[in-house]
Length: 231
Image (cartoon, rainbow, N blue to C red):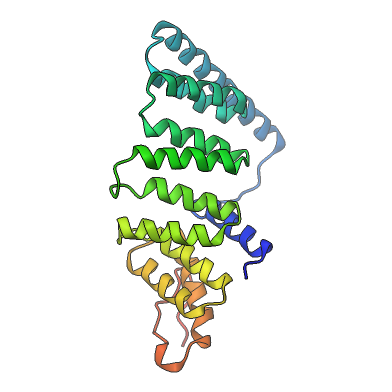
C-alpha cells in the first residue's frame, strides 16, 4: 500500500530532479536588488506584449506570452485569462491546453489540470509524443494516484522505449510497493538509456538494493560520480 508521506516525497523528487544548484552565501541586499530587477523585467515584458496583443488582436502568440509572464509574476488569474484568449483564437493548438494545465497544476488544481492534459492528448497525434502522457503521469504522482501514474509512465515507454525518465519514476513507485526486483530493473534501464537528471540517485539506490537481491541477481555496478573507488 502506498503511504501519503512516501508519495509526497516522490512528488518533491520529481519536481527538483532536473535542478542542480551551487549554494553560496548571498546578502539580503543582493536578493532584494535581484528581486526588483526581475519584477521590473517581467513588468516591462508584459507592457511590450500587451502593446503587441492590442496591435495584432488576431495573433494568439502574444496572449500566450502574456500568460507566461503573468504566471512568472504569480498573477495566475491573469495568466489563465490570457491563455484562454489564446485558445479562443487557436482552439486546436494542444500547446495552449498544456500551458493551461501547467498553471492549474502549479496552483494545485489537479482536477482541472487533468482535464487540460487529457485535452492536449486528444489533440496530439496518437503514438507520436510522450510529452502529454509524461505530464499527466507527474500530475497523478502529485495527486497521489500511484496506479494511474504507473500506467501512464508505462504508456510513455510504449510510445518511446528509449525514454529514460519514466524508468526512474517507475522504480520509485516500485520501491513504495516494496518490489525491490522491479525497482532494480527500472533503475538499471534508466542508467542504460543514459538518464542524467537522477543519475547519481539511481546509482545510490542500486547500491542500497543490491544486498536485498538473491546472489544470482546481483550485478556489478559502476561507482557513483564523485565517490572514491573502494580498495
